Image (cartoon, rainbow over all chains, first blue to last red; front, side, top):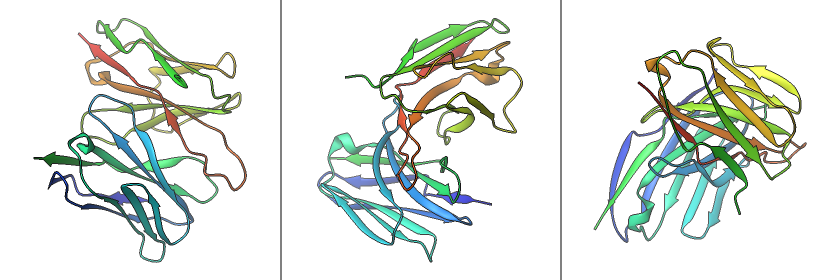
Length: 110
Length: 115
């Protein structure tokens, strides 16, 4: 089975760095996605990890450790517009469909 | 350039009155999905089409049906909406390929209100 855990809510200050963690228990892991979702809008793709290590993309980076069932999304130089929900989604081996976590609501304040 | 389009963006219906939500895509993706998302919850997969093959999730109520007349369009029919069906309905697409990321692309969603 699969159980995806993320913190419900986090707050951070504009200009700071924040790390959003995601842990999962799943068999046959085959990729992990991070999506950003602003209130009332659709999720937008941020990153994809299938191998261990860090993937960097501008201000956002995503890390994966398959042996630990753990990923994090790192946001640097936070901006007010980064206030959103961040969804972790995990895909099982043999399936093309990811299962979503509940998301972490990030609040960035001045 | 819109890639996954959903209409309408906001839909209000009455309890028990059938409603249809539509989704279209310009990506020529072979897989289309419908998700239901309630406030502060994860998107919940209702069903998806892999090409023309319909795949229903085991816990999707019979009240929800779907049609995919061609590659570009997919519809969600709610036959008798209840108050508990009020939610955001998200359409997504992906192109499945061996070894690919199969990233899902989401439409803007339709916010359904049931009175």
